[in-house]
Image 1 (cartoon, rainbow, N blue to C red):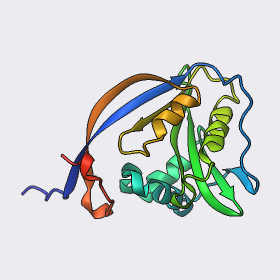
Image 2 (tube, one colour; image 1 turned 120 degrees about the vertical axis):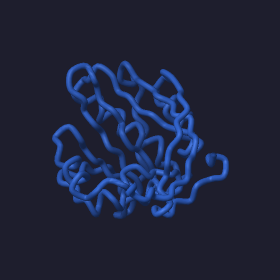
Image 3 (cartoon, one colour; image 1 turned 135 degrees about the horizontal axis):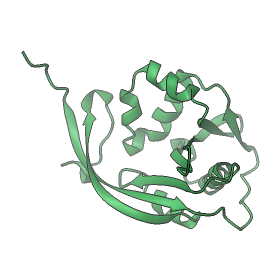
Image 4 (cartoon, rainbow, N blue to C red; image 1 turned 180 degrees about the vertical axis):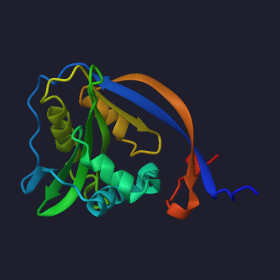
Length: 190
């Protein structure tokens, strides 16, 4: 007897992989008054899910929503992974996640984004620069990031403006579980 398959919506995205080979040479833009970035030294699974789900809900961030809590806890406990939260006037406004890869793997900016209520308020550039500067603190060989056509339309131009260069773009098909209830734009559906 075969197991029933979970209903999914198949989407097609273009994933762009980028890298930065040296830290930026210009001065970092200041975050607006009332804003600060805090590294979460012991991020709980519920807080991480709040950040990931809230930032990613409009951009089809689905993969970590399918990962069990114990696996997320294991990820958050790794010394090579760090979570940094942007606060504005005392409330979370965005976050980024860095993964330090051993050897010549460098540092990967695994997740980056703003909460929906602050998009368009001038926080993204400063938070991205904070992420880039933090990634370069330990002098890795390279800093990488990727984005896709499901992300905010300014994501790719902002990464390029921050000093990343495009390595390659590939088409991927994702099976997004319908149980997650994510809004999937028609342009991505196949």
